[in-house]
Length: 348
Image (tube, rainbow, N blue to C red; front, side, top):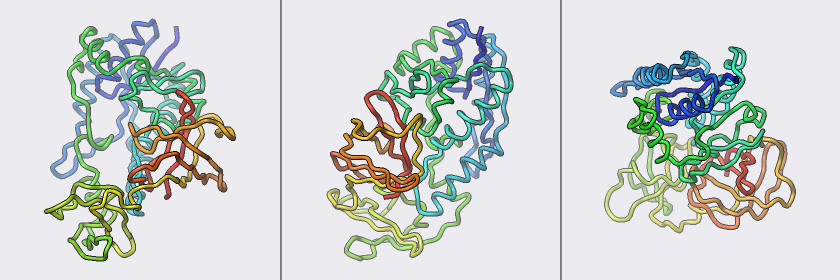
């Protein structure tokens, strides 16, 4: 009987994953990863509630339960990455870095040393050996967030929800009688709960008031720091009146944010992507391979006309259609059919 360590987050997805694996005959151990416990002013961290729910599910299922304390590594590898990225003017994705460094590296390595044969999580994705494939539920598919995980990790990973839809998972949770069956999904930052990125950043990056400027050079208002704003952003500008404004650029050195009301502004649209820190799950795409790309989670899959390696880990992708608000620091992920091949971090 193979031993599977399941990452129990206290949510319904990981709870059902553990229940299904036990039903399938695996020797299941639930593991709560303690990644973040810090309360922020007016923003209590929900980690204790999640921990208690994870423990309750383990008791309900009659499986062993462990806690892995990864808080220091999480701050060093994920939180610091996010803070440094925003301070430099980018919009990094902490969920992707968490999967790369914590769940499918640190958790995997620790579990294997602890006696596990395999690990499992509640992600919506499929594997075939070292290959990562799109989930059955296209609306919940999380391969975008998993594209920086190496193929060798997927050989030791099970995604029990890969063939299920979210409504089916809810139904299964009720059939299993799990305490998390009706628990709402956590929104906002992956590790702090219902906290906006801006509110979180303000705890670590000092506000630096500056000007919001139109594309014609007119000063329209003020902001709290250019690093708090992201490309294509519409909400939170507080300019008021008339048509909505969109962020089309920012200058970190001058501490200025540039906006437009024109949704067709050329700065908002791009059919060429330069990306760096390229990571391919198994191997680089073949020359002439038919590909599609996604520039945000649940974003449209756009045909790739050409993909060229520039130098080192820098690549260029020419798309068949323009994408809106291509954001430096976010990821561009490539697919061939149902297979996720990998991707990189957008620079321009």
